[in-house]
Amino acid sequence: MPASLQHQGTSAPPPTSDDVASQVNWRRIYLATGAFLLAIEALLVYYGSALTLPLVLLVLLVVFARPGEKLRFVRDFGPFLLVLFAYYSMWGSADNLGAAIRITPQIDAERFLFGGHIPTIVLQDALYDPNDPRWYDYAVVIGHLSHFVLPALFAAVIWQHHRHLHLRFMSTFVLLSYAGFLTFMLMPSAPPWWAAERGYLDHVYLVHETVPGLSRVYSEFSANPVAAIPSLHAAFPWLIFLFSLKLWGRRALPVVLYPAFIWWSIVYSGHHYVVDAIAGVIYATAAYYALSGHPYGLAVRAFRRLRRHPTCEPEVEAGAVRRPAVPSTTR
Image (cartoon, rainbow, N blue to C red; front, side, top):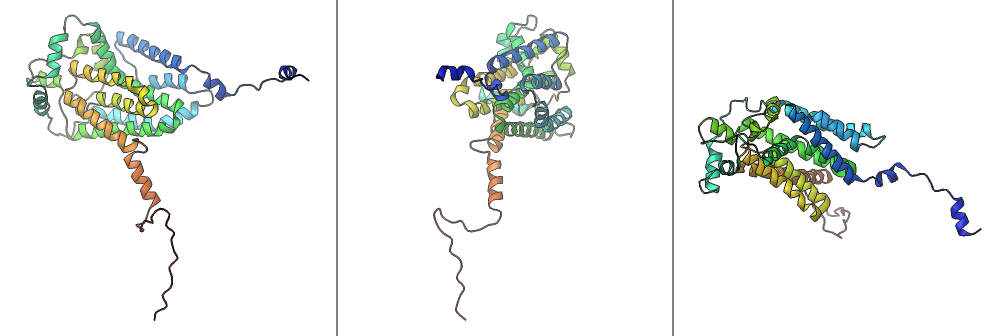
């Protein structure tokens, strides 16, 4: 029988779920999901509300979990969600231990680094008009609110395409969150707007208060007003960038524009000093290298070394052969 007839008579096997998933245009899905979340955020902001973490995760569950993997998605994200919910519930009370609030050290550091100037005041004097919010004021506030959305979206991307790194990313994210919380609790620090309200600075505006609808959004958050150092708004985008480099190498370099924009935004909007952002970057980098640095995190490598060598035995050089002990014949 001719080969052509053989091919015509042979039916191709039905595509598997993996074949179908490999043909999905994930780039379009990411863009559509991001646009959908931003559209919902804009709508809720207009009516004085904001995206909540359960709503974000519900959207991610529908979009990223393939048929038959919904329960696995919930199982893989569930323990970390419980930890993060506990963190956010305690966040607003982190300064209740009675520790002295640090106000002037950040101001002195800013003036030392920038020739006697406060970058927040310089930026607002040049760009901000409280009676006429500009387009970049809206962008700044939306970027500030993305702090609560993009880490979850990035975690879902890792879970879908690089599942071997999902546990490492979520563990690093939780470690970073609680390291920040512990610092807020032991060393509460005031942001620029707080210092200005009490006379330590001349004038600092909160940009979101003059953008329609957004002041009501911020009033619903149980935020800690003296949780400035480290800036987790600076830390989370930098952590996303570090993991992007780990996953995609040089192709991920444009991702650095996102943390750079957020750093500029939090300083311009009056929420943080530059030194707060620097501290956030240091915390994120330390958490990354502790649990996720190449090839393994420092803490993971130390733990594995302890498990591999539970007792202190003399090391044997590579290629050497252990010789059995010879019983002594002397009496």
